[in-house]
Image (cartoon, rainbow, N blue to C red):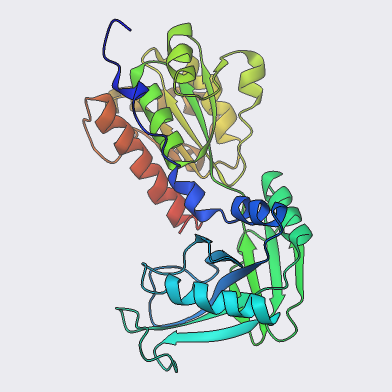
Amino acid sequence: MNKFEPHLFAPTIRNLAAAEDILPSIMAWHRTGLKFAVITLVNIVGSSPRAVGSVMAVSSDGHSAGYLSGGCLEKAVVEEARMCIARGTNRLIRYSKDSPYFDIEIPCGSGIDVFIDQGIDIGLLTRLHMLSHQRQAVIHTTNLVTGSNDVQVTEDCDERTRLDCDIFRRVVRPALRVHLVGSGPSLAAVAHLLAAIGFGTEIACPDAATREDIHSIGLNCHALTDKAIERLQGDRWSAAILAFHEHDWEIPLLERLLDSDCFYIGVLGSKAVAERRVAELSQRGIAPYQLARLRAPVGLIKGAKSKLSFAVSVVAELVSAAKDHAIIE
């Protein structure tokens, strides 16, 4: 080795999104014969660090995945879940405000109700994961009295997670996916940050140098061919980011993206470039309400010059838009 390459010595760090996904842990426990429970936040009185529908899982030997609070609740939940697993019974528990557990307080003073389900079927969880992977929104319904569970596909994009008497309906949407198209170090930096967070990506670049940079961080990157352009079929849980320094590619790509359901379309370029781009798209018949969907110049940090500040700027704007569209908490 002729030069110091610090990335070769860096520890492998699990991406942030992995902390939200309880299924891999459940599958690992199941394979080794461990029992488990799924714990769901079903009701909030006041405010809470996590949203209704947040989940965690606990194994019979005390391991856990996911989280329901800012860290003040998880230890108690693990102990309660292990007791439910041992007894073979489900339980609905109130914590903090109006709770019999006086020693467990949420700093905001709110009350939260969690449902511990030790009888949920591994097959149902696998089906839920499969449907989500197929880019379908599903409703996971749980009867808090009987413990019965069901999963159904929904086409209602306005459906919300909620508690109706004894029936809890949790909406599970496909994971956020980002179409990333362009070239240069800035695009590679955005790809790197998206990977660290754990967002799924579809990446296409016209030049071999950028593809090599992206491959070096363990991500797939396609050449920008007609077939790659056909992959730009964004659903309402998808975003798109275009980062070209030569803008000849942009117009046909944007025509396709503006005809999709992408909730976010960000485009690199100065204000002057953005104005010329809008004028050309308008001449091609793109309606003003569609053109208004473009985030250009892309990013929250105006005038970001380094690839680091550009990547943070773009991803911050993307995450803000995803939260506004109820795609992430």
